View 1 (tube, rainbow, N blue to C red):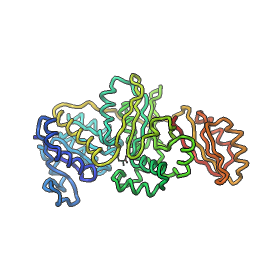
View 2 (spheres, rainbow, N blue to C red; view 1 turned 90 degrees about the horizontal axis):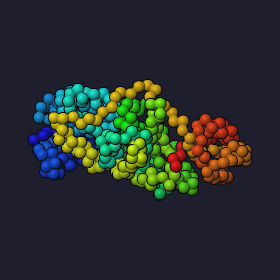
View 3 (cartoon, rainbow, N blue to C red; view 1 turned 90 degrees about the vertical axis):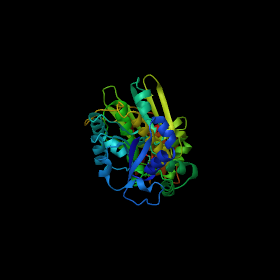
Length: 408
Ligand code: HSE
């Protein structure tokens, strides 16, 4: 018998408990040993549940119980999750977590503690919900040097943007719907301001390139400034607006990493990833592009990945899964200086001067709309370096300007 404790009984925690209890025979068969949920740590009252006897408010009971070999941390946030996870690892228990905030900020340290205590620390559910991505990257793509990882990593924002694109729904209504469906974080600011996607690209970059990338090293922009007007221009240009997270390795050993709303060409497969779905394209030197696609949020997709990690820990109680990276350093993440196309919306009360300066400066562009009703021009530039773009943009005679990157 292998005893498991679950820390937290929110959306994901309740999914983990239900999967472990309802699929117990099947899971125990796979592990060749019975898996028992011994404790669920939760401060709220769940005395109405059929497994009410498992609830405890006392973490000490869990950490001091030698029968508990595996702990699933599904509380979210840094405190008290960080302390609890650290203490469980030091107490010789393997830990699995869906907590991307924790892994993105403390991953290198917790992996080292796990190594020193000869236990496993696994976090498949922290990126891409139910999509297998970390294990495939670490194991199936192990022969590759990873060049880049690009993806849609946040289900809530993808759902919102999709509702805006397809149904012309406004931002707030779409966000309320995402919350109702249980996709959004407790505080949806993390979703809509891009912090959630930032944490996930930190984890992917750390795993792909072997050094920890911290959230404050990644330029991050959310979708709160994306308007129905932008969505409509993008559509007319044959693009879709997506929150894209991207990281790539540079020849000098540095890396780039960024999260930003991006106009994705309708010819790019990522433009068709809709609703709560996530997609991640990993480019390896041997494989080229490999794409992972599936539900990136929600109770059971995420619980599925947590339970898979529990099964893996149960199968490797006395051996280690080699899954790690080293600590990073200041200056490891640098700006991307590659050539790209930009989406620009410029507005001016003197529309004729704006048009004239646009025609002179951006005579070559992919597409443009001169919108006299709103006194603005929307356009997509040819691919160019940041410095050329900045120089050109300084010649544009406008009062207001909005800029986004494009992905072809
Ligand atoms: N809030 C996250 C999302 C949940 O919308 O993708 C999964 O990490």
